[in-house]
Image (cartoon, rainbow, N blue to C red; front, side):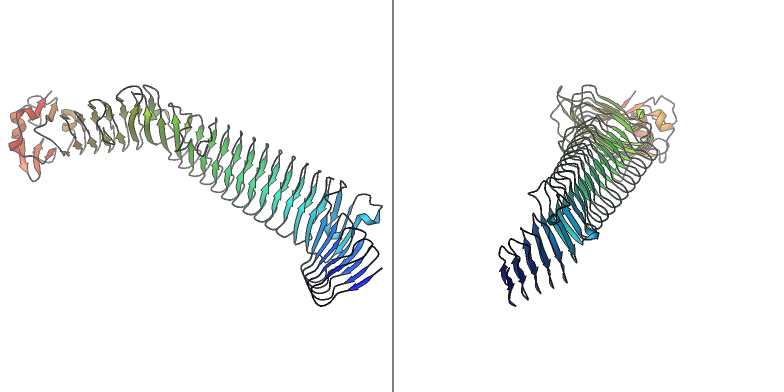
Length: 586
């Protein structure tokens, strides 16, 4: 037996194989009793007291001390300061049981006194166990760092910022209060972060993961996981497998990733990304953002349900046109539904209650592709673009304010002869290349037959019909036909020999001035009057009566149908420029 006393400096004290007493006094000391049942006192300072043999008794004294036991039991008193109990039982197969409130732990045969560990005045726990089924109730510690090892373990943390890993086996982990980091590791685990901003990892296995109250990050990892974010603004990822993910209360971020996942937002303004697989996404309450996939993740047969609120639903992605299989239901609220589709696939579009909009983008459409907005009665406004595909696209609007564009990079021939009919609402129709037929319908419409410019395909002899309302028509390249219909219209033929049509039925029911902005008398442009029979109310029925109804004015020629404001203003020409070749009657 030896009694070893240190100095006021930082000492290294080592015992013998007997029962020793080591006294460190002041300084940051390192004490190891060696073999035998030793008694170690750290004194003041930040000391390290270690035991790997025998049943030793430690007193840390003043300072932030580490009291370490490797493969053995003993007794530890921390004293003043923030003290850490370090236990390493990684080499054993025994079950380890710790109850922090009682200050007691044991492993192996409880009848063996050396298999017990007693502690008091300890703030922190650093624990590694072996392959046994452990139960670690560490709720009284201010902070724990526990690796439970293999086995079916149960670990409960305290009020601090804890780090816990369950190891292999079916583990149950509770973080408690604080900002915790919990790892289930292998096995089908149950992991609950508790209150605080926690990080929870399921890793391999079919795990049940909960964030609790706070802004949590949860990653399911491999396996079919059940994830619940709880209260707070959480970031939740399912990983590989068929996962169920619930955001709970708060503005959450949910990633389904690989597998057939079920994502539920709950209350709050949530963001969802389904990933690969057949996913079911439910926004719940709040103004939510739902997208079937990010980038090139592959597409499944997804269901996107916005629920209550003004939601944004997207099938596919702008980078990769992989959508077209999803069922999109906006639910209550003013929702926006977007689709990025190949081969004309649409899936289900249901705006639900509220004023809803659809933004549809098509790539590689089939020949003679037809879209009719009137088939979707729960959506008020449509914005449709056809990027590439085969010729013969037909787009029909409904009663809302629609925006149609066909850029017509076609695979099946030199041009795309498209039909676009805006019907009701204030519509924008953009034709692109090809011999297009654009019909504005009711509302104040804008029609551009050669959107994007270029004249590399075909003659592009387009037909533009404004319909009712104050419309803007632009024919673009080549010989186009423009009919503004009723209302105060603006007509631009563009290059080529264009025909501008006025129908008597529109003129007689109207009282507005139309404008031609680029009438060219030397390029074959013609103003064509339809059904203006002799004796009609306008007095115009041939070239002479047309000239009689016209006069020079500032900036052009004004043609009056009623001697007042119902007529045509032809910009940038004079009466002297006109000839019988510029007018036709049908």
